[in-house]
Length: 337
Image (cartoon, rainbow, N blue to C red; front, side, top):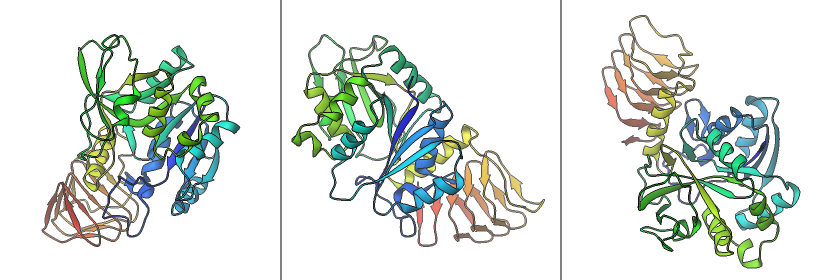
């Protein structure tokens, strides 16, 4: 059974954000925790206790957070990846040291809360295989996500409709439960890596070592004649744009992930659950908060203001009597869903 995971906590080049003027992409907030920590929380809940976290040169705050504010019992090793180092080389080095199957997950890759348990179950049934996460439904608003059209086994064809092309090359064998003749699938950067894939990483060719994304590496694996299988989720999501943060926070609130009120609010404030209010938040008399609102530490909401389906970041302010919905409020700008 898999008991370890590799977390890619280097900012994705396809992840665009106007909110990173005071924090890296990996530290963008998901209900009071950084994105990468939310990914790790999902794995921790199924019993993963050993983590290798790949950090970029700007992600030192991730290590500080995990060392000081996350669970104490997991064994966490940090590996620094320079901008010039390809991801293939880093993962090959990890596979040389860690020879057992593992889960690989990107910091901005999300699925249904119960999916990690399903992924590990699929691995137990096929411990040698590479098992990818995919769904016919994507919650991301970005057009840069990985999309593939995949035919059933036996047709001899795998097509694609948008870049990167590697998405279409990855999956050559899919689970029998998939009955439609053709499926449009969104793939996300979460996978259970079995023994055959670990061996592949250990013996990467010079060309494969230069691969710089997980999809590139998965595609190289398939081109060598190996099989990748698919574990389906109800939905997948790559947080690629700021608007995706609102969608992710909404889903976390619906899952009751830390939907707490941790600041004192006046009795005249109307709370429409689910809501998350961090410590150190100021809310004025008569305000209406919710549903699906996250107020980060240091934010403030004025008297009789209305905030719905929105995120208010630290040090940002919603003025008195103002109505805000479907937005992210920062100190620099307002992003509309």
